[in-house]
Length: 397
Image (tube, rainbow, N blue to C red; front, side):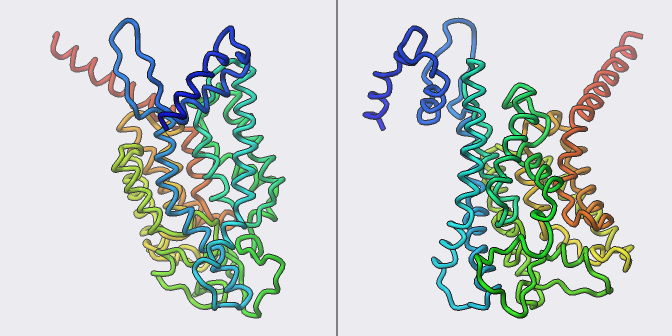
């Protein structure tokens, strides 16, 4: 790496002001700071510099996502071969089937998203920001495996341009970019985002006679009889261990609660994510699940799920660990984080249970609370100001 840095340092003046390629300074700087920690120092004033800059923060989040990502690829292969009735395949056959199934989606998300950010940075003469390092992998993970790449490209372009760049770029967006992409796809192409045929990749093969491609929450949302039992793609009942470890169909990065908890541990240990948001969202979801289950009714079959099933099924845990904790779109005050997280958890379960048109409520809950995060912080700060003023008046009187 030392030799590589020396070579890059030799060509660095060509990309600075007055150099032959000064117009490409943003692109060069983006790659340079991605590879190496900047060594510039302040010439005046008192400043504290931390080697853990935003690029390395984003890379830590990507590392936390790897367990979910790798398991999801393997699970795609598992669901595929189960669906076509071929159960005797090795670990690597399952994994590489899933890897090649999602690779076009990952490449599409990064090429379109980073391409737009590079172009905007060049036009504005700004540094290339690194926020899309995380969004680029999150987007495919929360989409069905069979999402067409052209649809994904349109959705990513819309989210990056209209939910991020028009507000100033990384750090200024008030909505989670990955969820805006997912919402755009959900409302623009509903037939490709829900139903029985989008969450399992058949790869052109004939499905087995017992095949059912609906997700567990989708099965309950469309149930017409009480006591519906959720099943896997072969029609076999799902045990709690199947649910916890993620051996069922769904958006391929969201199914394994076990892998999500590994990612949560990494984010909490490194101090990247807020435990206040995660904990309060978990409490909000758990309390609402208990209430929904206590007042369960045949009209809303999802209410019959136990609280633990509610938390482990679908994208609930993935949303509160990787989406709700986005520091740009979440609340900034500590009290606000408790309120913000609790409302996300509670509202996700409410939407899931009582609106059968949206069997997965986490997406809408996080996006809605993104909109209210500034208001929550405003109210918390003003409450603190009023409390301090009242103490000052009492002391002076």
